Length: 484
Ligand SMILES: Nc1ncnc2c1ncn2[C@@H]1O[C@H](COP(=O)(O)OP(=O)(O)OP(=O)(O)O)[C@@H](O)[C@H]1O
Ligand SMILES: [Mg+2]
Image (cartoon, rainbow, N blue to C red):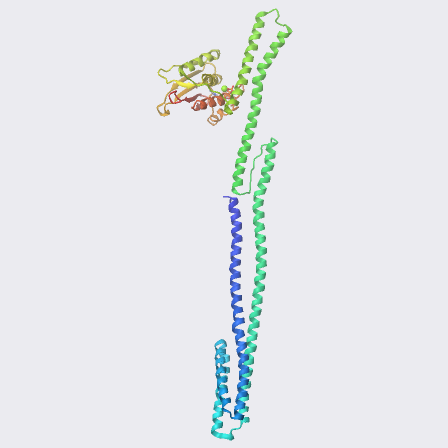
């Protein structure tokens, strides 16, 4: 099944939304990593560098204090050394908590040895007096101090390296995020343009096709839209368009048929009238009053036919525009049918067709416009006579079926040519005629269309039952006066 316009647009926008969501998740992840790296670079690495540098300074201060104490033997220096040593140890343990690694453990051991060895040296000196020289002690001590200072230098350098590395990683992450953002923006623009372009193309192309086909129809070329690659709504519209084109083509054909039938209907009486007037003008029958009066009768008959045809067309257009005036009166259906039969009996006699009707007793009266009902009965009985071969028969009947809710069913049955099943519904449309093989029976295709309007205006319905070659029965229903 083809997707609808909404589904096409939704599909495209869901793809864009998925892209935006993935991009958001990626950016959140990278920003989190960046913030973690910056935190370590700005916090841990900077702390390590600062502490290591402060430990180097403190180490030098401790060495200078112990030298002063050794030389002056002033106990204040001893106390000062002991205080500075506590601070040194505190910083040392802080550094250890930040960078404790196996390679650094030797440094921490040596640093601890350094901080305690001075007191051991002083104790030695106290025990052995002058025999322990400061220079020999200092020699041993300097070696340790140099090792510690170079280790601290290495820690500072390593801290700087780590910090630089993290800054480099941060920069590379920022650059990556920037490029991904640019790529994402381009992808979004391309995808949006593609979605818009494809959807618009799928809508605009069929619209252009519709435009072309509509122009063709306006020019009288009834084209159909065959294959259409478009959303479901437009495919449905194409189906409706084809149905409309078919209907317009049919109406066009009906219009042509109508004009040709009508021109025939009008031309025959007009020609007869014109020729009769020519003859009278030329005085051909000046000395033959009998022929003259026959000619006048023909003119009169043709004028009546002409007026009848024009009136039917006017009646139909009034009925269609709901401008028809109906004058309803209570009437007896038996009488209405009998008067119609007697009106049409000359035609039946001329054709040798028998017409049967048994008036029903106790029929409910009906509320009808007698003129219109005459027209309705004339149409149906007239058709029966027209489409029944000589020696045939026509039967009229009135029933009040129990299942019809009180409606009266009037039927006109003939032994005529019958109607094909596929034509049974169409014959009630205006100008709709079924051409017989020889095309000898003329008509304008208005009788049944007018009949349907009349029946509807009386609150009933009209239908037909027929079998080709076996005759037809036209029914119409009327409500009794009590229900109208
Ligand atoms: N009794 C019938 N038997 C067979 N076909 C019929 C009968 N009545 C109507 N039809 C078919 O229905 C068509 C439409 O009938 P309708 O009365 O509307 O038009 P018409 O008789 O051709 O012309 P008009 O009545 O306007 O002079 C007819 O052309 C005919 O083919
Ligand atoms: Mg007719």
